[in-house]
Length: 94
Image: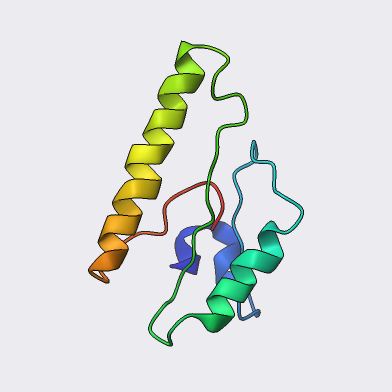
């Protein structure tokens, strides 16, 4: 999983955090995602943070993006999680 990006072949750390370049983090985001990983069952290998659109109501494109994040990431991943079948940690913050 980590080897999908160039630097992944040279990592020596237990955890790797990826972040899209245009993403802003809440001040507790890293603490929360690491805490979730540490308390997850042993068979969990990835955690994805929640992605929110900052200007979700400003124009039509932002509204569509917000709806896409909600449907494509948040709701589908929660549904897959109910069946312990999430295949991809999708999003801008993993």
